[in-house]
Length: 387
Image (cartoon, rainbow, N blue to C red; front, side, top):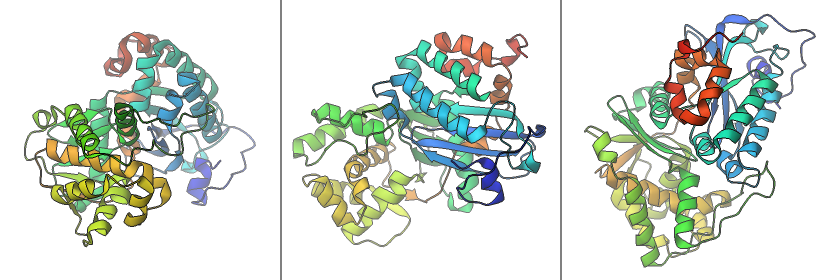
């Protein structure tokens, strides 16, 4: 696996030779790791935020692991292995790029898949995170959806820059869906994979289950073809899960979608199927037209007509239904579309509370089983010294 050292020095995913001895920590450097439902993103930056983070990514279906045969323990083992390879041990034997010194302040933040893990098995999650800390020296925090929303808006605004012309951004992740803005946010555990699984269950469609703790289902269920009655049933289900969206987002509710299910899937598919130019917007009318026309076809036929790879086929229609429901719930006629490779790393680097908790891992883990994601909102200063 590539190391952060190699990412800075050579910009490629190649193995780096480990140093002969531990290097001194850099007190002015922070390491942040974004543990999303679809993968791991890592980066580092100066505490004064004058330098951009150095990014490293690993794709991983965390939801499939949580729901797999080994559950929370399987997720902890897999992520622990990835982090061990990435970081070396807690003494800093594997260095980071900043002046060949590992960052002193290091933290990882888990989102929707980890919130699900806490709900399913709070004691198992605590034990998994304790074991992960013992292996890597890294504290993993589970944050509420509201905090994830703040991270997402900060990161998207910084990445999109002048391309962001709307007050809100739409982030469709693997496990959660977030609409975030400076004036408010809305989040539900209804990301691409979570929604597709819910849709499959509602219609009684079988969904592939991982056969080992470290493998994820390669595709979703065979959702298509849908009858008109099934299609309307899924529309009603999505609408029910998005109730309250307009109440939590002060107008105007214009939004920009920037994540891959929209920018690489739904938007180009609608354009091709309807013969439209890329205008940087996706209208509700066009989206509904494609859904009504193509939902009765099988997924492979739809993906082929849309010019998308077969790997996108299983999720394309469910993504369309989800995006249509969000647009309707916000009372919009269209949304902007702007592709951006956004991670929560830059926002985590600015989160002083997260790094304060990283200095009190034992205290945090004691609170996690009973307080859940709310443990992050507590005051780390109330904990006794640990080191």
